[in-house]
Image 1: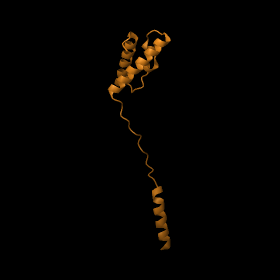
Image 2: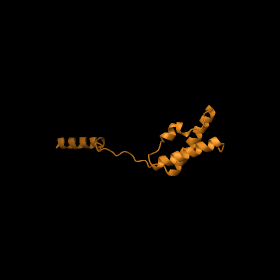
Image 3: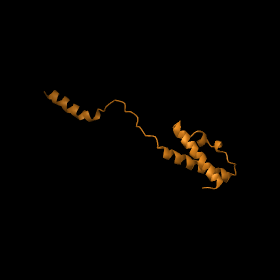
Amino acid sequence: MKKLFAIAGLSLFLLPFSGCAHPQPPPYYAPPPPGAIARQGFDTGVAAARRDISLGLGPNVNRHPRFRNPPVPPGQPAQIYRNNFRRGYRLTYRGGR
C-alpha cells in the first residue's frame, strides 16, 4: 500500500514535466495587403533614384536588385511591387518628389 501511494505521489509530481511530443505547425503569417506592397515598392524606388542621382548615375531601374528580385511573393504581388518601384523611380528622376 505504501508503494502504491509513493508511485501515485511521484507520478503526480512528474505529471507537469511530461509535455506533449506532437510537432507544432509553423505559425502562419498573412501576406501583406496589396496597398502595403505598392507603398513599399514606391518608397524603395524613390530611395534607389535618390541614390543614383547622388552618385551621378543615369536613370536605369534595371540595375537595382530590389527591382529585379522583389522581396515579396512571386506573381501578382511582385508585379505590383515592380510597377510602383518604377513609378517612384521615374517621379524622383523627374523631380516630382
